[in-house]
Figure 1 (tube, one colour):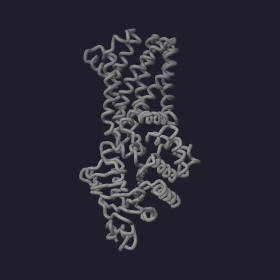
Figure 2 (figure 1 turned 135 degrees about the vertical axis):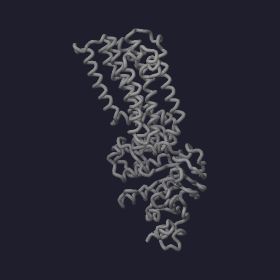
Figure 3 (figure 1 turned 45 degrees about the horizontal axis):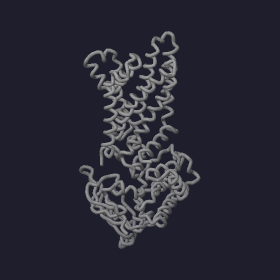
Figure 4 (figure 1 turned 30 degrees about the vertical axis):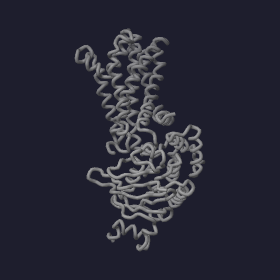
Length: 255
Length: 242
């Protein structure tokens, strides 16, 4: 087993056994339960078609899943600095690149957990296995790109920061900036708005998924919307690999 | 055989010099004391030699490996950092297994090494207990066990008895002597406690404000001053404050 696998396995254990993972996922499942209940059973609020209800669930799963991934990844380096445990890790022969890749892989497990938790809700709203399965596979593919990309950016913030508070605030600010435009309904219809939507990894991912799930377009018809999620994922992982020796240091910014 | 060789080792942070031209050697099986008041540069010296920081000047080798090969050096050293943090949710055994795995040991080897080291430092009975429930002394012993997980040629201990009661200090010092005697490892012990140095060290480096004030066997440094305390105060300029 190589070093990154060892780091990923231990970080995952720390996250899921007695760590924050179960608490975060519990809160997330409460949110999904409330949305599913309103979308499926409440007569006054049951205004959504089945496909739109599934799309709503997928969008919530992606938005919250990415949020939780950023929250976890923003803690990975600056959190260890604060707790004083980073030096022991730096004193091992594990390459810095292996450390960041292991930590990113562990942070991404919370995204996968969000997707798994969303499955029963998708099954209820999709009225069966086939609808739920298509939505789940779509969310897995598109959401993983966004989660890895923005989780990687959160980790870069973490490497740059000496305090957890700074890295978490930077990550949440980035998410807010990316997520806010997706809530403007008129934005995609205008030329400039569409451009903004296409370069925004969250906006373009949500748009692509809604095209497949609601408008029933083929998976290959709007692939242009996946460029930005793909670019952010590749760029973030590439930047982490290149900058790992500078990011994973005892103190941010000094040698 | 020389296991540590430092020549003109320096570290500067902008205009501030943390360590200025440290030159010394240490041999196999030797316990060398790194003594100095707070801010003398002891921790900086250890962080340079353990490749955590990059020097701004000078060269060094550890276990025969040049300082420009940090990954190879880290494979051959064990370190107990100053104010080391511990993951409170992990058990002592899990903590050591993880460290052993990072040094390339297989899962069964890591388990065996963890059990052996916990026994060596007297923590076998608490192996499965969360580190958060350990006393400070137990955490320090766990830290020493972690420093030995890769059978290092050189062990760096940065103020290992800080904050411990006399009994805890005695246990740690006995462990340090044992490491040098039984394992044949070179031990670099950073401290500002003179009695510790007299108890376990063969040779001594006295640092003050980043500069090396004295180096050599304790007897040579003490000669003429009457006691280590007097020699230390004289060399660090603290006797003139009286």
